[in-house]
Length: 136
Image (cartoon, rainbow, N blue to C red; front, side, top):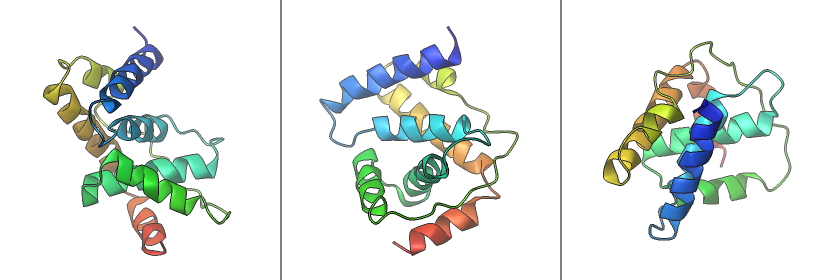
C-alpha cells in the first residue's frame, strides 16, 4: 500500500467515525497529511490552514470540529496568506503508521501522535503560526 492509499483508507475510517463522534477527528488527518506533504508550490492558504489546525489540536487541545470552525472564521475576509518554511524532515510518523494501529481508541490516539510529530517538525514555523492565531 502506498502512502496515498493509506491516507485515503484513513480518511474513509475517520469519515465513518464522524457519524458516531462529533469531535470530527477527520480534520486532524487532513491537516497532518497536508502539512507533511506540502511542497514549495503548495497554496499558502493550504499550508497555513494545516499548520493552524495542528497548532490548535496539539497545543490547545481543540477537536477537529473546533479547528474547522476556526478555519471558517479565518477564511473571511479574504487575505494574503504568509508562506511558511518547509522543513526537510516532516515528522517521524506517517499515515501508514496510524493506519497500522487497530481501529478505535488506539488508532485515534495515533492520529494525535501523528499530529504532534508533524507539528514538532515545523518548529521554525511555529512562532509565525502562533502569531497568526493571535490575530483571530
